[in-house]
Length: 499
Image (cartoon, rainbow, N blue to C red; front, top):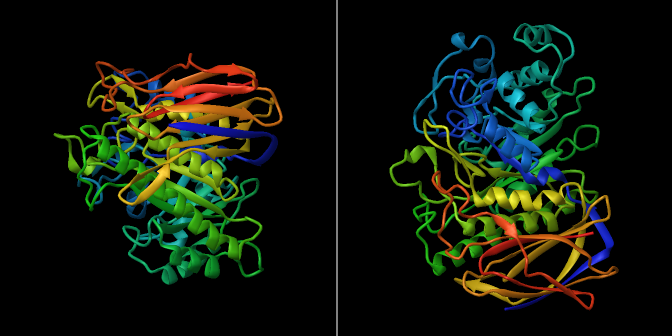
Protein backbone atom coordinates (compact mmCIF):
# COMPACT_ATOMS: atom_id res chain seq x y z
CA UNK A 1 0.00 0.00 0.00
CA UNK A 2 1.63 3.32 -1.06
CA UNK A 3 1.22 6.31 1.27
CA UNK A 4 2.34 9.87 0.60
CA UNK A 5 2.52 12.25 3.57
CA UNK A 6 3.41 15.94 3.62
CA UNK A 7 3.97 17.58 6.99
CA UNK A 8 3.50 21.36 6.99
CA UNK A 9 6.51 22.01 9.19
CA UNK A 10 6.47 25.71 8.28
CA UNK A 11 2.95 26.39 9.61
CA UNK A 12 2.58 25.54 13.32
CA UNK A 13 -1.00 25.29 14.50
CA UNK A 14 -2.72 25.09 17.90
CA UNK A 15 -1.10 23.68 21.02
CA UNK A 16 -1.78 20.01 21.69
CA UNK A 17 -2.92 20.08 25.30
CA UNK A 18 -0.98 17.57 27.37
CA UNK A 19 -4.22 16.59 29.12
CA UNK A 20 -5.33 14.76 25.96
CA UNK A 21 -3.04 11.98 27.19
CA UNK A 22 -4.79 11.54 30.55
CA UNK A 23 -5.81 8.39 32.39
CA UNK A 24 -8.61 7.00 34.53
CA UNK A 25 -8.53 5.01 37.78
CA UNK A 26 -11.82 3.71 39.16
CA UNK A 27 -12.59 1.58 42.18
CA UNK A 28 -13.23 -1.31 39.81
CA UNK A 29 -11.71 -4.77 39.92
CA UNK A 30 -7.98 -4.64 40.56
CA UNK A 31 -7.33 -1.12 39.32
CA UNK A 32 -6.88 0.45 42.76
CA UNK A 33 -6.45 -2.43 45.20
CA UNK A 34 -3.84 -5.01 44.14
CA UNK A 35 -3.04 -2.73 41.23
CA UNK A 36 -1.86 0.77 42.01
CA UNK A 37 -2.29 0.32 45.75
CA UNK A 38 -0.57 -2.50 47.63
CA UNK A 39 -0.53 -0.92 51.12
CA UNK A 40 2.39 0.20 53.23
CA UNK A 41 3.02 -3.27 54.68
CA UNK A 42 3.20 -5.08 51.34
CA UNK A 43 6.38 -6.95 50.35
CA UNK A 44 5.97 -5.24 46.96
CA UNK A 45 8.13 -2.08 47.09
CA UNK A 46 5.94 0.96 47.63
CA UNK A 47 5.89 4.55 48.80
CA UNK A 48 3.11 5.10 51.34
CA UNK A 49 1.17 2.19 49.81
CA UNK A 50 1.53 3.09 46.12
CA UNK A 51 3.42 0.54 44.06
CA UNK A 52 6.85 1.97 43.19
CA UNK A 53 7.56 0.18 39.89
CA UNK A 54 4.14 1.15 38.56
CA UNK A 55 4.58 4.78 39.60
CA UNK A 56 7.96 4.80 37.82
CA UNK A 57 6.43 3.32 34.65
CA UNK A 58 3.63 5.90 34.63
CA UNK A 59 6.08 8.76 35.12
CA UNK A 60 7.92 7.54 32.01
CA UNK A 61 4.86 8.22 29.85
CA UNK A 62 4.32 11.59 31.53
CA UNK A 63 0.78 10.99 32.80
CA UNK A 64 -0.71 14.52 32.86
CA UNK A 65 -3.89 13.86 34.85
CA UNK A 66 -5.66 10.98 36.57
CA UNK A 67 -9.45 10.77 36.92
CA UNK A 68 -10.84 9.23 40.14
CA UNK A 69 -12.84 7.59 41.85
CA UNK A 70 -15.06 6.71 38.85
CA UNK A 71 -16.87 6.04 36.60
CA UNK A 72 -20.06 4.58 37.90
CA UNK A 73 -18.44 4.19 41.32
CA UNK A 74 -18.25 7.99 41.66
CA UNK A 75 -22.02 8.43 41.96
CA UNK A 76 -22.13 5.92 44.81
CA UNK A 77 -19.09 7.40 46.54
CA UNK A 78 -19.27 9.72 49.53
CA UNK A 79 -15.94 11.38 50.10
CA UNK A 80 -16.21 11.42 53.89
CA UNK A 81 -16.04 7.61 53.86
CA UNK A 82 -12.42 7.95 52.72
CA UNK A 83 -10.90 10.36 55.24
CA UNK A 84 -9.68 9.99 58.81
CA UNK A 85 -8.06 6.92 60.42
CA UNK A 86 -8.36 3.94 58.06
CA UNK A 87 -9.45 1.58 60.81
CA UNK A 88 -12.49 3.79 61.39
CA UNK A 89 -13.56 4.16 57.77
CA UNK A 90 -16.82 2.42 56.83
CA UNK A 91 -16.82 -0.67 54.65
CA UNK A 92 -19.31 -0.45 51.79
CA UNK A 93 -20.47 -2.85 49.09
CA UNK A 94 -19.29 -1.86 45.63
CA UNK A 95 -22.68 -2.40 44.01
CA UNK A 96 -21.51 -1.47 40.51
CA UNK A 97 -18.44 -3.69 40.18
CA UNK A 98 -18.61 -7.26 41.46
CA UNK A 99 -20.37 -6.68 44.77
CA UNK A 100 -17.05 -6.75 46.62
CA UNK A 101 -16.53 -4.90 49.88
CA UNK A 102 -14.88 -1.49 49.48
CA UNK A 103 -12.59 -0.86 52.45
CA UNK A 104 -12.13 2.87 51.72
CA UNK A 105 -8.44 2.40 52.48
CA UNK A 106 -7.81 4.64 49.49
CA UNK A 107 -9.53 7.99 49.90
CA UNK A 108 -8.86 11.64 49.17
CA UNK A 109 -5.52 11.93 51.00
CA UNK A 110 -4.16 8.70 49.56
CA UNK A 111 -5.22 9.45 45.99
CA UNK A 112 -3.85 12.98 46.01
CA UNK A 113 -0.58 11.62 47.38
CA UNK A 114 -0.43 9.31 44.33
CA UNK A 115 -0.94 12.28 42.02
CA UNK A 116 1.92 14.11 43.73
CA UNK A 117 4.14 11.05 43.32
CA UNK A 118 3.24 10.92 39.62
CA UNK A 119 3.58 14.67 39.15
CA UNK A 120 0.13 14.78 37.55
CA UNK A 121 -3.07 16.74 38.11
CA UNK A 122 -5.95 15.03 39.93
CA UNK A 123 -9.31 15.00 38.18
CA UNK A 124 -11.98 14.31 40.81
CA UNK A 125 -15.39 13.01 39.73
CA UNK A 126 -18.12 14.39 42.00
CA UNK A 127 -21.21 12.52 43.13
CA UNK A 128 -24.37 13.93 41.55
CA UNK A 129 -26.42 10.73 41.28
CA UNK A 130 -26.70 9.97 45.00
CA UNK A 131 -25.05 13.07 46.45
CA UNK A 132 -26.00 16.67 47.06
CA UNK A 133 -24.65 20.08 46.06
CA UNK A 134 -23.59 20.59 49.67
CA UNK A 135 -21.60 17.35 49.73
CA UNK A 136 -19.69 18.26 46.57
CA UNK A 137 -19.22 21.84 47.72
CA UNK A 138 -17.72 20.59 51.00
CA UNK A 139 -15.34 18.22 49.18
CA UNK A 140 -14.04 21.15 47.13
CA UNK A 141 -13.58 23.20 50.30
CA UNK A 142 -11.87 20.29 52.08
CA UNK A 143 -9.37 20.02 49.22
CA UNK A 144 -8.85 23.68 48.35
CA UNK A 145 -9.65 26.06 51.21
CA UNK A 146 -6.60 27.61 52.90
CA UNK A 147 -8.49 28.17 56.17
CA UNK A 148 -11.75 27.40 57.91
CA UNK A 149 -13.38 24.43 59.61
CA UNK A 150 -12.91 21.97 56.75
CA UNK A 151 -9.31 23.13 56.27
CA UNK A 152 -8.76 22.49 59.97
CA UNK A 153 -10.22 19.00 59.57
CA UNK A 154 -7.93 18.38 56.60
CA UNK A 155 -4.94 19.47 58.68
CA UNK A 156 -5.99 17.18 61.52
CA UNK A 157 -6.00 14.34 58.99
CA UNK A 158 -2.42 15.10 57.99
CA UNK A 159 -2.50 17.78 55.29
CA UNK A 160 -2.16 21.42 56.27
CA UNK A 161 -1.63 23.00 52.83
CA UNK A 162 -4.54 22.90 50.37
CA UNK A 163 -4.12 20.67 47.32
CA UNK A 164 -5.76 23.26 45.03
CA UNK A 165 -7.47 20.63 42.88
CA UNK A 166 -8.48 22.25 39.59
CA UNK A 167 -10.31 19.54 37.60
CA UNK A 168 -13.75 18.53 38.87
CA UNK A 169 -16.35 16.38 37.16
CA UNK A 170 -19.94 17.27 38.03
CA UNK A 171 -21.38 13.76 37.90
CA UNK A 172 -20.62 10.85 35.58
CA UNK A 173 -22.76 9.21 32.90
CA UNK A 174 -25.86 10.86 34.30
CA UNK A 175 -27.76 9.38 31.34
CA UNK A 176 -27.10 5.91 32.84
CA UNK A 177 -25.45 4.69 36.04
CA UNK A 178 -25.17 8.28 37.28
CA UNK A 179 -28.92 8.71 37.67
CA UNK A 180 -30.73 7.71 34.44
CA UNK A 181 -31.48 11.39 33.80
CA UNK A 182 -32.64 13.11 30.65
CA UNK A 183 -30.44 15.80 29.15
CA UNK A 184 -32.98 18.44 30.12
CA UNK A 185 -33.11 17.29 33.75
CA UNK A 186 -29.34 17.02 34.08
CA UNK A 187 -28.78 20.48 32.60
CA UNK A 188 -30.75 21.91 35.53
CA UNK A 189 -28.87 19.73 38.00
CA UNK A 190 -25.56 20.82 36.52
CA UNK A 191 -26.43 24.48 36.96
CA UNK A 192 -27.46 23.84 40.56
CA UNK A 193 -24.34 21.83 41.50
CA UNK A 194 -21.97 24.11 39.59
CA UNK A 195 -23.36 27.14 41.44
CA UNK A 196 -22.14 25.74 44.76
CA UNK A 197 -18.84 24.30 43.51
CA UNK A 198 -16.92 27.52 44.06
CA UNK A 199 -13.38 28.77 43.62
CA UNK A 200 -11.09 29.30 46.59
CA UNK A 201 -8.07 31.65 46.65
CA UNK A 202 -5.45 30.48 44.18
CA UNK A 203 -7.62 27.53 43.15
CA UNK A 204 -9.88 28.37 40.19
CA UNK A 205 -12.02 25.40 39.19
CA UNK A 206 -12.39 23.69 35.83
CA UNK A 207 -15.87 22.16 35.93
CA UNK A 208 -16.63 19.29 33.55
CA UNK A 209 -20.28 18.52 32.89
CA UNK A 210 -21.45 14.95 32.41
CA UNK A 211 -21.87 14.66 28.67
CA UNK A 212 -23.14 12.31 26.02
CA UNK A 213 -22.81 8.63 25.34
CA UNK A 214 -21.43 8.02 21.86
CA UNK A 215 -23.24 10.12 19.21
CA UNK A 216 -26.05 11.54 21.34
CA UNK A 217 -25.70 15.02 19.88
CA UNK A 218 -29.03 16.04 21.43
CA UNK A 219 -27.42 15.78 24.88
CA UNK A 220 -24.67 18.19 23.85
CA UNK A 221 -27.22 20.53 22.25
CA UNK A 222 -29.19 20.75 25.49
CA UNK A 223 -26.14 21.23 27.68
CA UNK A 224 -24.70 23.97 25.49
CA UNK A 225 -28.07 25.72 25.26
CA UNK A 226 -29.00 25.43 28.93
CA UNK A 227 -25.73 25.26 30.87
CA UNK A 228 -22.99 26.95 28.85
CA UNK A 229 -23.77 30.49 29.94
CA UNK A 230 -24.03 31.51 33.58
CA UNK A 231 -26.37 34.16 35.01
CA UNK A 232 -23.87 36.94 34.22
CA UNK A 233 -23.29 35.74 30.66
CA UNK A 234 -19.86 34.14 31.17
CA UNK A 235 -19.22 30.43 30.62
CA UNK A 236 -20.49 28.21 33.43
CA UNK A 237 -19.24 25.06 31.72
CA UNK A 238 -15.48 24.73 31.29
CA UNK A 239 -15.66 21.21 29.86
CA UNK A 240 -18.32 18.80 28.59
CA UNK A 241 -17.59 15.08 28.46
CA UNK A 242 -18.34 12.35 25.96
CA UNK A 243 -17.76 8.61 26.40
CA UNK A 244 -17.12 6.13 23.61
CA UNK A 245 -15.80 2.58 23.87
CA UNK A 246 -14.77 0.42 20.93
CA UNK A 247 -17.01 -2.64 21.32
CA UNK A 248 -17.52 -5.40 18.77
CA UNK A 249 -21.07 -6.68 18.38
CA UNK A 250 -23.88 -6.43 20.88
CA UNK A 251 -23.70 -5.61 24.58
CA UNK A 252 -22.25 -7.04 26.78
CA UNK A 253 -18.90 -7.42 25.01
CA UNK A 254 -18.30 -11.03 24.02
CA UNK A 255 -15.36 -10.88 21.60
CA UNK A 256 -11.98 -11.99 22.99
CA UNK A 257 -9.08 -9.61 23.35
CA UNK A 258 -6.53 -12.05 21.93
CA UNK A 259 -7.77 -14.93 19.76
CA UNK A 260 -8.78 -12.88 16.70
CA UNK A 261 -8.44 -13.11 12.92
CA UNK A 262 -8.08 -10.37 10.30
CA UNK A 263 -11.86 -9.92 10.20
CA UNK A 264 -11.96 -9.10 13.91
CA UNK A 265 -8.90 -6.86 13.55
CA UNK A 266 -10.62 -4.80 10.88
CA UNK A 267 -13.78 -4.64 13.00
CA UNK A 268 -11.81 -2.90 15.76
CA UNK A 269 -10.33 -0.42 13.29
CA UNK A 270 -13.76 0.38 11.81
CA UNK A 271 -15.48 0.69 15.20
CA UNK A 272 -12.58 2.70 16.61
CA UNK A 273 -12.69 5.17 13.73
CA UNK A 274 -16.28 6.02 14.67
CA UNK A 275 -14.63 8.26 17.26
CA UNK A 276 -13.83 10.68 14.42
CA UNK A 277 -17.51 11.20 13.54
CA UNK A 278 -18.46 11.38 17.22
CA UNK A 279 -15.90 14.09 18.00
CA UNK A 280 -16.70 15.96 14.81
CA UNK A 281 -20.45 15.89 15.56
CA UNK A 282 -20.16 17.11 19.16
CA UNK A 283 -17.64 19.73 18.10
CA UNK A 284 -20.06 21.09 15.50
CA UNK A 285 -22.80 21.50 18.12
CA UNK A 286 -20.43 23.20 20.55
CA UNK A 287 -19.14 25.53 17.83
CA UNK A 288 -22.65 26.91 17.28
CA UNK A 289 -22.94 28.04 20.90
CA UNK A 290 -19.28 28.70 21.66
CA UNK A 291 -17.47 30.08 18.63
CA UNK A 292 -14.48 31.10 20.76
CA UNK A 293 -13.89 27.55 21.97
CA UNK A 294 -14.15 28.40 25.66
CA UNK A 295 -15.63 25.02 26.62
CA UNK A 296 -13.54 21.91 25.97
CA UNK A 297 -14.79 18.60 24.67
CA UNK A 298 -13.54 16.13 27.29
CA UNK A 299 -13.35 12.49 26.14
CA UNK A 300 -12.83 11.19 29.65
CA UNK A 301 -13.58 7.52 28.91
CA UNK A 302 -12.30 5.78 25.78
CA UNK A 303 -10.67 2.52 24.77
CA UNK A 304 -11.37 -1.06 23.69
CA UNK A 305 -13.83 -3.18 25.68
CA UNK A 306 -13.68 -6.94 25.14
CA UNK A 307 -14.88 -10.00 27.01
CA UNK A 308 -13.00 -10.53 30.27
CA UNK A 309 -10.11 -12.96 30.32
CA UNK A 310 -11.27 -16.55 31.00
CA UNK A 311 -11.22 -17.47 34.67
CA UNK A 312 -11.38 -13.89 35.95
CA UNK A 313 -14.22 -12.16 37.80
CA UNK A 314 -16.71 -10.89 35.16
CA UNK A 315 -17.24 -7.72 37.20
CA UNK A 316 -13.53 -6.85 37.21
CA UNK A 317 -13.18 -6.16 33.44
CA UNK A 318 -9.66 -7.58 33.22
CA UNK A 319 -8.46 -8.03 29.64
CA UNK A 320 -5.21 -8.69 27.82
CA UNK A 321 -3.80 -6.61 24.97
CA UNK A 322 -2.10 -7.03 21.63
CA UNK A 323 -0.64 -4.83 18.92
CA UNK A 324 -4.23 -4.37 17.71
CA UNK A 325 -4.94 -2.25 20.80
CA UNK A 326 -1.76 -0.26 20.25
CA UNK A 327 -2.89 0.64 16.73
CA UNK A 328 -6.36 1.53 18.06
CA UNK A 329 -4.74 3.80 20.68
CA UNK A 330 -2.65 5.55 18.02
CA UNK A 331 -5.66 5.94 15.73
CA UNK A 332 -7.68 7.47 18.59
CA UNK A 333 -4.94 9.81 19.79
CA UNK A 334 -4.53 11.03 16.21
CA UNK A 335 -8.22 11.94 16.19
CA UNK A 336 -7.86 13.92 19.42
CA UNK A 337 -4.75 15.71 18.16
CA UNK A 338 -6.44 16.58 14.88
CA UNK A 339 -9.33 18.13 16.87
CA UNK A 340 -7.18 19.70 19.59
CA UNK A 341 -8.83 23.09 19.14
CA UNK A 342 -11.81 21.59 20.99
CA UNK A 343 -10.56 18.31 22.54
CA UNK A 344 -8.34 19.39 25.41
CA UNK A 345 -8.76 16.57 27.95
CA UNK A 346 -9.12 12.82 27.40
CA UNK A 347 -8.78 9.80 29.68
CA UNK A 348 -7.92 6.27 28.62
CA UNK A 349 -9.97 3.67 30.46
CA UNK A 350 -8.36 2.42 32.63
CA UNK A 351 -4.82 2.83 33.85
CA UNK A 352 -4.08 -0.66 35.27
CA UNK A 353 -5.75 -4.10 35.23
CA UNK A 354 -9.04 -2.84 33.74
CA UNK A 355 -10.07 -2.58 30.06
CA UNK A 356 -7.36 -1.01 27.84
CA UNK A 357 -4.82 -0.61 30.62
CA UNK A 358 -1.23 0.53 30.19
CA UNK A 359 -0.07 -1.99 32.80
CA UNK A 360 -1.11 -5.33 34.32
CA UNK A 361 -0.08 -6.60 37.74
CA UNK A 362 0.08 -10.19 38.90
CA UNK A 363 -2.81 -11.05 41.19
CA UNK A 364 -1.49 -11.24 44.72
CA UNK A 365 2.06 -11.16 43.39
CA UNK A 366 4.92 -8.85 42.62
CA UNK A 367 5.28 -9.00 38.85
CA UNK A 368 4.33 -6.16 36.52
CA UNK A 369 3.86 -6.11 32.75
CA UNK A 370 3.52 -3.08 30.50
CA UNK A 371 1.06 -3.39 27.61
CA UNK A 372 1.52 -2.29 23.98
CA UNK A 373 -0.70 0.70 24.79
CA UNK A 374 1.95 1.87 27.27
CA UNK A 375 4.45 1.88 24.41
CA UNK A 376 2.11 4.02 22.29
CA UNK A 377 1.77 6.58 25.09
CA UNK A 378 5.58 6.61 25.35
CA UNK A 379 5.90 7.29 21.60
CA UNK A 380 3.26 10.03 21.72
CA UNK A 381 4.59 11.82 24.82
CA UNK A 382 6.63 14.12 22.56
CA UNK A 383 3.37 15.75 21.37
CA UNK A 384 2.45 17.00 24.83
CA UNK A 385 2.35 20.80 24.76
CA UNK A 386 3.74 20.98 21.20
CA UNK A 387 2.14 22.81 18.27
CA UNK A 388 0.19 20.63 15.89
CA UNK A 389 1.39 20.53 12.30
CA UNK A 390 -0.95 19.83 9.41
CA UNK A 391 -0.44 16.56 7.54
CA UNK A 392 -1.60 15.97 3.97
CA UNK A 393 -2.27 12.24 3.75
CA UNK A 394 -2.67 10.56 0.37
CA UNK A 395 -3.34 6.98 1.40
CA UNK A 396 -5.94 4.38 0.37
CA UNK A 397 -8.63 3.77 2.97
CA UNK A 398 -9.38 0.51 4.69
CA UNK A 399 -12.96 -0.69 4.73
CA UNK A 400 -14.95 -3.18 6.74
CA UNK A 401 -18.68 -3.77 7.13
CA UNK A 402 -19.47 -0.75 5.02
CA UNK A 403 -17.31 1.51 7.21
CA UNK A 404 -14.17 3.26 5.96
CA UNK A 405 -11.14 4.09 8.08
CA UNK A 406 -7.62 5.37 7.28
CA UNK A 407 -5.14 2.89 5.88
CA UNK A 408 -2.42 5.02 7.44
CA UNK A 409 -3.19 7.61 10.13
CA UNK A 410 -0.61 10.24 11.01
CA UNK A 411 -0.06 13.31 13.18
CA UNK A 412 2.84 15.69 13.60
CA UNK A 413 3.91 18.47 15.95
CA UNK A 414 6.54 21.15 16.39
CA UNK A 415 8.25 21.08 19.78
CA UNK A 416 9.42 24.20 21.60
CA UNK A 417 13.03 23.32 20.70
CA UNK A 418 12.17 23.30 16.99
CA UNK A 419 12.09 19.52 16.61
CA UNK A 420 9.41 17.92 14.46
CA UNK A 421 7.80 14.73 15.73
CA UNK A 422 5.71 12.51 13.47
CA UNK A 423 3.62 9.58 14.72
CA UNK A 424 1.72 7.20 12.48
CA UNK A 425 0.07 3.81 12.38
CA UNK A 426 -0.65 1.20 9.70
CA UNK A 427 -4.15 -0.19 10.25
CA UNK A 428 -3.75 -3.01 7.71
CA UNK A 429 -3.09 -6.33 9.48
CA UNK A 430 -1.57 -8.02 6.42
CA UNK A 431 0.28 -5.57 4.17
CA UNK A 432 3.06 -3.06 4.85
CA UNK A 433 2.60 0.60 3.95
CA UNK A 434 5.29 2.04 1.71
CA UNK A 435 5.65 5.56 3.09
CA UNK A 436 7.05 8.62 1.35
CA UNK A 437 7.16 11.62 3.69
CA UNK A 438 8.17 15.23 3.11
CA UNK A 439 8.59 18.14 5.53
CA UNK A 440 7.34 21.28 3.85
CA UNK A 441 9.53 24.26 4.61
CA UNK A 442 12.58 22.39 5.90
CA UNK A 443 14.97 19.62 5.01
CA UNK A 444 14.42 16.44 7.04
CA UNK A 445 17.26 15.65 9.42
CA UNK A 446 16.36 12.36 11.07
CA UNK A 447 17.39 12.27 14.73
CA UNK A 448 15.67 9.04 15.72
CA UNK A 449 12.90 6.60 14.89
CA UNK A 450 11.16 3.78 16.74
CA UNK A 451 8.55 1.26 15.66
CA UNK A 452 6.10 -0.95 17.56
CA UNK A 453 5.25 -4.14 15.69
CA UNK A 454 5.21 -7.92 15.99
CA UNK A 455 5.26 -10.76 13.44
CA UNK A 456 2.29 -12.45 15.15
CA UNK A 457 -0.57 -10.00 15.73
CA UNK A 458 -2.07 -11.95 18.64
CA UNK A 459 1.13 -11.89 20.73
CA UNK A 460 0.67 -10.54 24.27
CA UNK A 461 3.04 -9.31 26.92
CA UNK A 462 2.87 -11.78 29.81
CA UNK A 463 4.46 -11.99 33.23
CA UNK A 464 6.88 -14.60 31.85
CA UNK A 465 7.55 -12.61 28.65
CA UNK A 466 6.89 -9.01 29.70
CA UNK A 467 8.41 -7.32 26.62
CA UNK A 468 7.31 -9.68 23.84
CA UNK A 469 5.67 -6.66 22.15
CA UNK A 470 7.63 -3.45 22.55
CA UNK A 471 9.23 -0.67 20.54
CA UNK A 472 12.57 -1.08 18.83
CA UNK A 473 14.79 1.22 16.78
CA UNK A 474 13.31 1.70 13.31
CA UNK A 475 16.39 1.10 11.21
CA UNK A 476 14.73 1.04 7.80
CA UNK A 477 14.08 4.79 7.55
CA UNK A 478 15.97 6.42 4.67
CA UNK A 479 16.35 10.12 3.83
CA UNK A 480 17.06 10.83 0.16
CA UNK A 481 16.61 13.94 -1.94
CA UNK A 482 14.62 15.76 0.74
CA UNK A 483 12.19 12.86 1.18
CA UNK A 484 11.87 10.26 3.92
CA UNK A 485 11.06 6.73 2.83
CA UNK A 486 10.33 3.60 4.83
CA UNK A 487 8.15 0.51 4.93
CA UNK A 488 5.73 0.56 7.86
CA UNK A 489 5.03 -3.05 8.91
CA UNK A 490 1.49 -4.44 8.97
CA UNK A 491 -0.41 -3.51 12.11
CA UNK A 492 2.22 -1.20 13.58
CA UNK A 493 2.87 2.20 15.17
CA UNK A 494 5.95 4.34 14.57
CA UNK A 495 7.42 7.65 15.73
CA UNK A 496 10.00 9.73 13.84
CA UNK A 497 11.99 12.58 15.36
CA UNK A 498 13.52 15.27 13.14
CA UNK A 499 15.96 17.82 14.56
